[in-house]
Length: 442
Image (tube, rainbow, N blue to C red; front, side, top):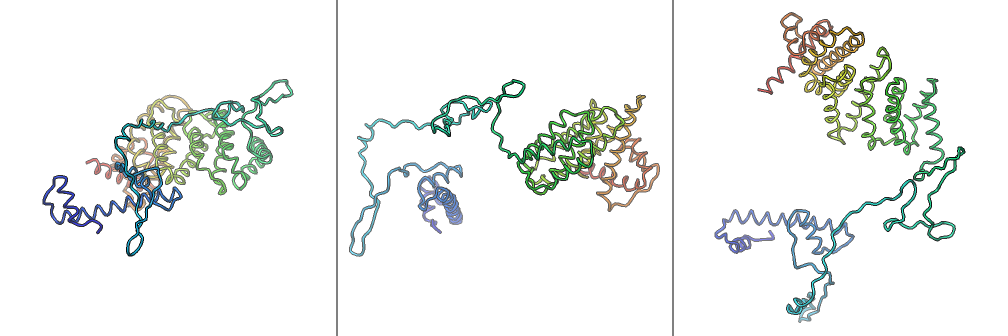
């Protein structure tokens, strides 16, 4: 060990702790040696990152600050170390010259100025394509004359006589711009073959990395401006699926821009003008894409699925929301997996079915259609639960089991479960999850 037990005892006596036991001194000596190795290793990192081969006092102090330890004072100096030679009978010995300092002279000298703290300031790089003439920005140079150019905005004269000031210079090549325009025009085509060809190109093309952000923005604008146009919304979701499935694109940085569009198509109040149109398939597709995103990027973003599930749960439990929003929330939670059904859907089914039964008492064809889809979505959630617990033995279908099931999911949904071919498995899964929940609560 670097420190012996006697050294530890001497230090403990100097701070007022006499007669320290031998096992304590041994343990403390080992801990001191470990801490020294730890500080030295951390200091070596600072030395290597500073492109130096000599360990300095500043490296040690930086390592101490990282470990939240007060640095050592009085050993760091900006002056180079001077070595003096002392000849001896055997060999020359070199030592560091320790300069004598006159304290009276040092005290009479004026104090040095206080160093300035590091601060951050913000400034405009460009405003409407024009670089402001401020100290932080470099002076633009005229390429022809080699002299600083005047601060004049570049104006473009259009055919209608209106002058426009272009924004920042476009970084896309002409080929990519033409490709993007051709793809967006093809997506608006009435010919399904042209649309499918454009989507296939997006899903396999390897040279459109720079267009990912433009496609994501195109999806967001399309969803925002065509909220009641079912065909345009389906096309936007198809574009989202195409760019996600392209193995040559890195879309992870754009997920926070894509997910709001998917959630809009999932839980929006109305996605078409006529309620008889098939907007349910659009919601199902959006739910599948959200589930795939959670599965693909869940390890990188640990809170992604939790935040999406919290959003869907609020939509599911809000009685002021329409049934179409409830349907999207139920389908979205179901697609996220059986665990979401166990924790979020199943405990709230009975209360929701009471609300749904009240809504269905109203004489409205639209409410009847929406309510039927909501019931089927809840039934599908129970099927997902039964498939996750497929090892359970099916329960016998009788009035006792029906009453037990009705206590959990409501009488209406219990009747639908009884009419199912695999109703016994669903009842077994619901009973098992309910029992486990009660045991945990107790």
